[in-house]
Image 1 (cartoon, rainbow, N blue to C red):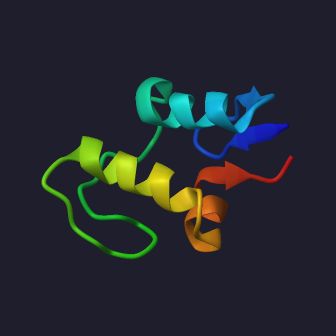
Image 2: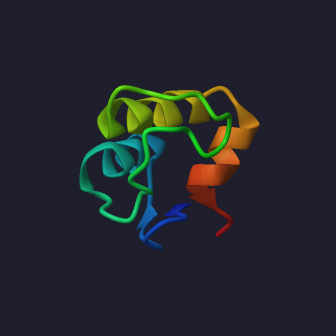
Length: 69
């Protein structure tokens, strides 16, 4: 089980969780600068994509978007 740190919903699969972060979750911080690494983006959407993609390979980003279950 994977739990969204921002809204508390839980997901059975990692792909469902990533879709939720990208498209559904309204509680993701509305910022153009990544809160983990500080990289600045042209849009909030690109920042969200960065956080999701980085969560696949970087532990710091993964811990930021996923809450312990």
